[in-house]
Image (cartoon, rainbow over all chains, first blue to last red; front, side, top):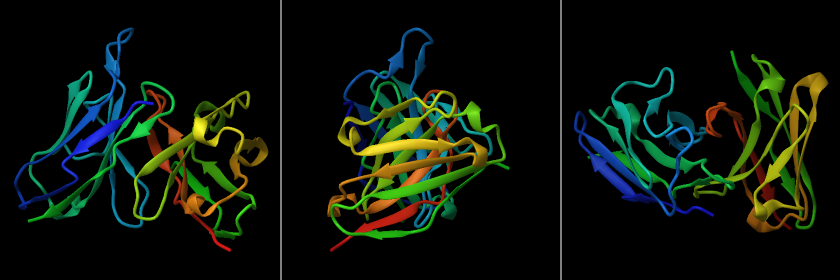
Length: 113
Length: 119
């Protein structure tokens, strides 16, 4: 199975500042036939199911604010929130869907400093 | 609007089975895979498997092979997931989620069902 490792485990950022979360996969998740990275990012708030933010590593899901962006390729990926808002407090997960079983990172808890 | 509505919370004894339902609406049921993901209390997300409503094909994570069974009721656009031989380690919130169709990421999720396994 592909192991997804996120860093840091927790992060405190001031309102309006940039937040950066990293995700590293134990194997490449770039599919050569379509040149897409099968990597998604989710946001989960307490008591709620996860919400899809980003797929194919950098494509923002419809309705997701443009302060959220994804980057990276191969095995190293980043989720960036350009200007942190209070409503962004949550746990963030990366997920690889390159190979079965799909696997998630352990989560990064984002708080306000 | 797309909705996935799951059945209610369950309390089961060790060794028992649980069956959870996920009723889809607001889209063409046969056109999207349904996945199951669980989350133990205070823990991360664990993919269990997926179901193709067209043709009933399934794929399970090795960990759940032989213990999880996914089925459908097309007349009600419902996918069911049954998990047998429960242990306390199966205590978790179980989510169904729709495959976006762009490589097994999940764009709509059910509200989750808490399954508690306790003697």
